[in-house]
Image (cartoon, rainbow, N blue to C red):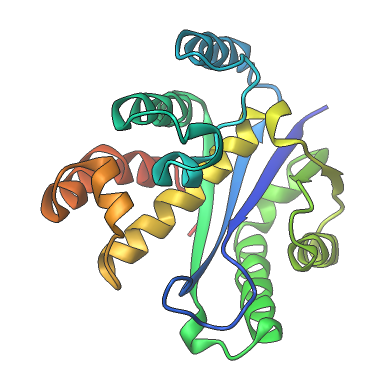
Length: 231
């Protein structure tokens, strides 16, 4: 049976526009289940163990960049090494993604933000309808982190397609962590084009604003662009 897996992650909150939280990001990662990625997963697990983490550690790129939670005791070099593990996984795996960044400044409330996401997700499905119809089964994975996204996933996908929705545990699926990476890189690109990178973001990717932006554009955004799905 030909099965398409879609992993969904988000970055941001549904609160009002704030200087520290001006955007909301939604990312989808697509994977053909007939494509065996076990070798790629083995490489991730081995790389994590070599870096002092458990084999099933779930990489969270936001905290990794900001030196929070599991990464508070790690220096920049160690954290960047872990970041590269996930980037290399996305770069070498036969997966694609589609990401949107929504400016909360132009959306007055939660309902408007959800409506904007519904329109974009619906448009993506409609413009690639033949592709989605070619699969015998489509399974959508989300961690139910935000109820608005859970509702969006169930309503929009099932309004256009017949899909199965499953709750995912991030540590169990590196492809869900790949969606997290796509969110982070899409957000960083938007920040470069608008409000600028934060100090922690500049420090993580380089030692100055200009070189951090250059490193992201040459070393990371190109990977994201090569993997983009749809129009």
